[in-house]
Length: 355
Image (cartoon, rainbow, N blue to C red; front, side, top):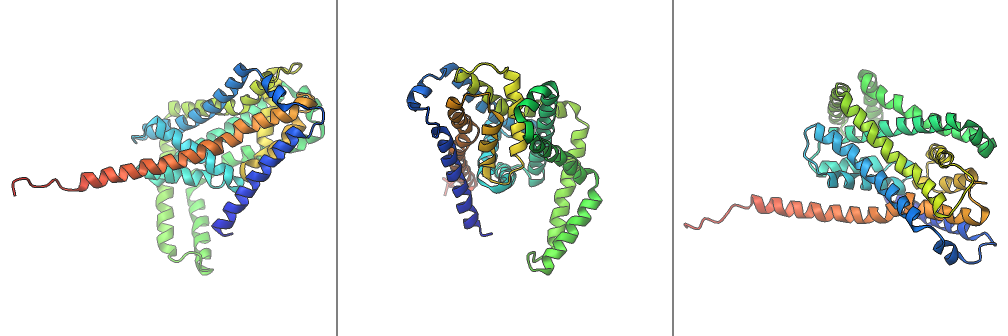
């Protein structure tokens, strides 16, 4: 598929997603005054929703910062958070979130981080996040099993499929590190196959480059295995980050003055919604998030409020990342331009005043 066509389709999905959310929020005939409904929201709880968004972003950035600083690279916390925001932005505009990690590795490369270590940083974040959301959703499900079965009923198969898909990614990534020869052989075969169909021009050079990346990746992962404190720190950052993301709906619930469902039950549904919707290959899981929200939170939010709750929740968990992400991409270009100009100035020899 051509790059321009991908961008057009991604933008179209985003527009359709926004339209779907607004439609679901406004379709209730009983809701005659939207302004009044929003004005009745508790601003304190709404502020907490924003801080959940902030926690998700900051702790995700700290995940990269902790690993890269421990590996000996000088990167500021601000730059690490910038990497996280770039990942969120591109993940939300590309199918299956395929563009997020490559753009993060590229952003770190521009900051002076080798590709192998940048790849390792996003891989660690991926493993810890996948493991942590799987653990969180499983524990909360087991603790609130009766409530979940009453609430979801026939949708449990979606939850099981989503959970298996999220957790299954962890051993696959680890397999790439601990079964290096197998992975190398598979990649060599793929590269030579691509060469036969004229998609790779220099197979030997490509194999050598991939082998070098795998060497660095393998070394970085095995070094990490000897740093239990760093591993625990990575899991802690992932836990706090995901808690911010999944916990935002709890504060949306309180912001609208809802009662009758415990906060931990609302959080449980949020984690299950996350693993269910993540299996959708659309940008930002558009459509799936909206649909599952309306299904999972039936009888949690009243019919009069549910559409508006979806609108607020989706803004803070999706659209705000797009808005901030655009600014982040522009800011990175400005920073890189200034850094390039500074390097060029430093390279210009000073004039000899004695001539």
